Amino acid sequence: MRRLIQSHVAAGQEGVDMVCTDGLVRRVYPVLAAFVGDHPEQCLVACCAENWYPKCHMPANQCGATVEFPSCNQVQTAHFIAKGLCPVFLPFWANLLHCDIFTSITSDILHQLHQGIIKDHLKKWCMAIVGKKAFDSRFRATPFHPGLDHKQLEQVFVTTLVGTTPNHEVVWASCALIDFVYLAQYHSHSDDTLHALQDALNEFHAFKDVFIDLGCHEHFNIPKLHSLVHYVESIHQFGSLDGFNTENSERLHIDYTKKAYAATNRRNYTMQMTKWLNRQEAVRWFNSYLTWHNNGHTTGPSINEHSDDSETDDPTPPADQGSPPSSYHIARRPHFPRQTA
Image (cartoon, rainbow, N blue to C red):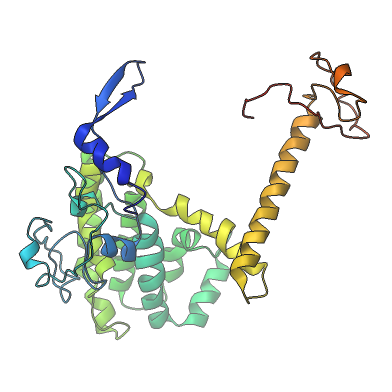
């Protein structure tokens, strides 16, 4: 990471000329405004242990508290070890001008809410209370249930839970947490939506002890649970959180890692994955060419020309759009050189 942003160090200190949207050239000084990553990556760049929260001085045994702790400050290096921070050799942000990595860390809807609090915790707590078979049967009985994905499960989670336990606080706590998840995904916010977001979090904390009373969990020392306290602050600082969600980038893990690994024999898979990805890229390029060709964009001389002298710059007439061509011809020389598709 330090090598990737090495050029930004000098640019932030000395400035760099850039063309703005109005066409004028101005001298700008780029700074690191936001860091997007999952919890282990956030802890890595914040130089703290993973059982701590990277943005503030929260003790590891008070993750379930609703109070806000003092924010971390990279100037206070003398207290790093006492605050759960770990020494790291030259972090990538050490030489960046006006950089405060602790305030640059953004909230992550995918890993903190969908896959964190809902999938890894709330779902397991409720299934421990209701029972896996009873929960699955009620989910299958839901009319037009959307699917098995964690985001789709959230749409019918509360309706599946209603009537399964005599303790209504379980439903109230679950409903408040689901409300928080949906409010956090708004594309735009106002004071009313932020108040509703905070009220949903307060309601969950008011009823969350029922999970300990029923024996499905022992404590709430979960760093991702404490991260919900900073959502309103993060929205005030960065705007709506859909622009900082890691879901878009995590989607590439499926296309370039999981599918590639599934195509191997699980032995020496690195070379096999690389070869599989190269072949998939070649197929996509060829499909793009066929689509371009079949749309009548064939131009330039064909490969069946006898000599270079007979080549002309006149484009060939487009093929009949009603039926596919019987054969394909690739030009020896590009008709539009040095131009991208």
